[in-house]
Length: 234
Image (tube, rainbow, N blue to C red):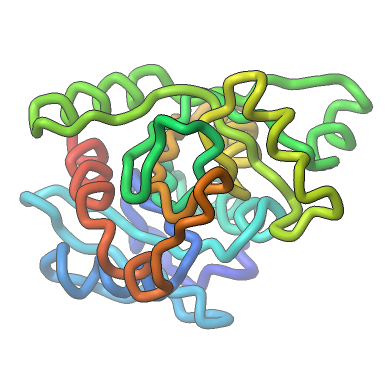
């Protein structure tokens, strides 16, 4: 029985988009889907199901960080039979070649979180995306004249780390960007034998210190949202 998602059997589609911000979920439902039904408002973590190009797709807010995302993804996979989960989020650039509003497709995720250390008894697990979803998204991006960056990201538990220079170590090892959820999403997909992918828009840069506004992060990253919906419905 789901504790945090007040949906009935059949309310949620087999493919779910996962924005951290529930208001982004609402924006997608109201502007990009048809015949929309809201199935969740528990804790204001909005969830909707609708049609995109005639195909059922759901969108569920997860909140920020791996512990919050883990609650919703566990319940989606365990209780509602979700087969594909696509995170649509924002990230901070760690490389000079990444600029505001660039699109990143997360191939795999490093992390500073203790969640997998606990889960695997101190062993190291390598959380990676579903190749089939990644290829679908990448091919769809190219056909739309987009130029996504594909590579590893780092999922951090700390938005405000004690060492403000810590990101440089991840950058030195090739991580493209930092965000807060991918590693747990990819780990849970592996556990449940499901498919998962993260599409990220660069919202700020740890190099240039540029950043987008809160309103832009909520409603303006439509290239990422379009690509996620196209990928979801393939």
